[in-house]
Length: 428
Image (cartoon, rainbow, N blue to C red; front, side, top):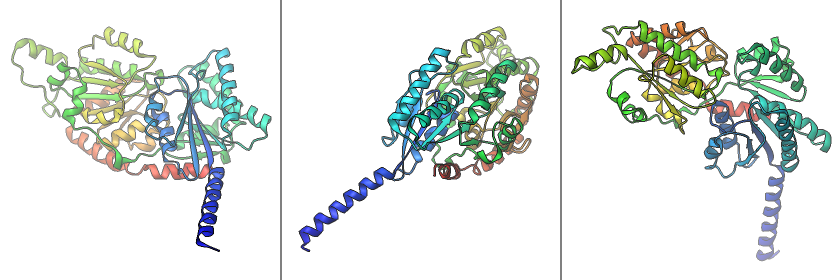
């Protein structure tokens, strides 16, 4: 065979091989309710962008929101993104029906091998749509649902019963449940959501080496000028403004601290020297700054509560910020007052940033934080307990340092690679 013929034969074989590889690639469709960036969106982002491109094609479909998830994915052209116009939190029946049809149409169009569901509305409508799609097309579709904290643990007894019923109905349409903590695994078994062989525990993971936290002076620039100049401790949190995040309890705790707390001589960040009697009077009244990064449907309620408790001069709602974790270096104490959680990324990020942490004892948080060693855990929905723990840290810089160092070491145990590998194994 001549060299020319050999070359042509080689090119043909390579083209055929390339086509076979394309055909053998698995499509993974990630479905999530909101495109506003939060923990569940970061989870989807990390899974989608790290999928081996030779073996998988990642598709991310999301509904309502500001589109920040899509913005974050724009830097990864291998990931296909799709906006679903009827997918939203708490949809009306007609909107939910339209959304169901929209998801079925998407499945027929994309023909994925795996449908990976995230968040409550997406998991119910998505698993229902998968059932319809499989019946129509006889397709072999694997349905995986990641539980970012069981939705029936949300505040409200009536809603909880409805959510539990919906969870049990849709469970039969799913092949695998990924739970993010032992806590959620046990609840799934106790509530008889699913048999044990369909429940898989995979902790969230963080690529700590790639994280960048701004220098404190630069991070502080997001604060209003008066907050930057008053030399007071900054207590902070990062959260979407939903009832489940418990931000109202944190604001009430701040009111208690203002009422009761006096700085000890060991204050980690003492008030600056005052040049006038009026400044001295103000410093006795304002003994901290509270910075909340985030936004959401509860914003107006929180603003009204802040005004009612006369805390406008010391609480700043910064709104949503891209790459919000980089500002964690501004916080002297990080607080997560949630009523319900899965295994929150923001705690892993705060641990990696070396921030002393106060958090509620809910969901997987006790599996991240050893109380008294790598953070302080308190009872949820309890402003008094929150205030007491924060005061304890404000008075004790040595404990702040110890908790922060231990938390930083603990964060290293929750690596991204482990999470990715365990999850990708379920796709096969």
